Length: 176
Length: 284
Image 1 (cartoon, one colour):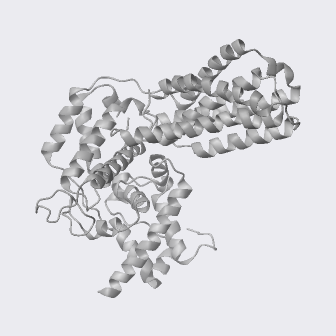
Image 2 (tube, chains in turn purple, blue; image 1 turned 120 degrees about the horizontal axis):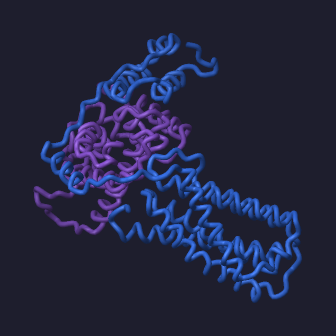
Image 3 (cartoon, chains in turn brown, purple; image 1 turned 45 degrees about the vertical axis):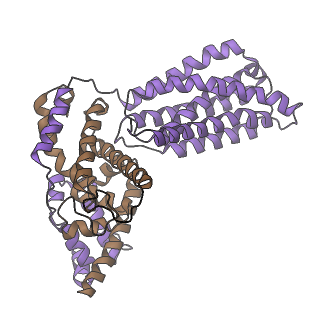
């Protein structure tokens, strides 16, 4: 990150290679179409680039990156909602319509394995916390930094998510 | 590994997962993401054997996550976009240095404006009143300066939230004025009062612009929080000038017409930020 701030072009490549998988996972709930994920992903990197001087070398990098990613995602969500509200419903939508009606029956942006299927069924704030903890490998304090929250609040969200997951996993097992 | 006796059953598993994801776990980010099983104490392992619900959760949390990869062309596109505008940048100063800059700007703005409006209020106040009010205003300015400094840098650990800071500041001002200043009914309450509010709000507008110029060097993410904090610190600046220049030092006048400036500017800041958020697409 320091090399990136100093204008080293190789640092850009390394940063993209190392951070992109975690960012992609974070920006892409499984119901979002690939094209929108790619737009968000590009926008996120541009925002990171524009605000690179606000990173302090003494601070951990992941909370800084994910705080920016979080707001990119929120802005994307708001834009999407605004766009959908403006759209006119037609009687027979074209087959290749890019409009995504909801989580059910939509083309997945990334492969939907069991882990992400359950993760995406959680409320957004809990999903976000578990995603950062488990997938991005951040610590509780780093998640608190990235979400402008406290460690206590993050633990509480995680515990609520655990309880929901316990119930869902048990129900699924009983259904099988 | 000994766990507190009151934590048992499923809560024990939650606590062990907290430890696994805690800062002191010593696990690297990659190890956590790659499905390394959280280490459990003997009691927790025993609970897992008995509790099917927790076993399911533990298996889920231990699962290896498949890496997400975008098309190489997309990476190439982003890389070229970033490299084409890549220039060396100097990092922002520390939070403390940024907060000090806000405080200095606050002081440099208050002194000349108070000098122009006169120090009638300063001479009217007793020593205890002067100390009490100055402490509240100074603590408020320092708190809001730190809040703005934290907002300039994404991912900074915040000691308190901006909304808590504004509420505590308002309560402190209310308490200080209510206790230290006389509660006598002022003459011509409205006629003599509203010019104070107008003056305070007029001072707050250029002050907000000054603080905005300082803040925009960073990358504030939440516009509403930023709007509220900018409105609050600009309003506090207006209140500070009024406090030292206004000759009417009765509690009811200070609370309604001076304190009202703080409320008005904070709400205006939030509303302006909301309007900006609504009409713009980019975050900053």
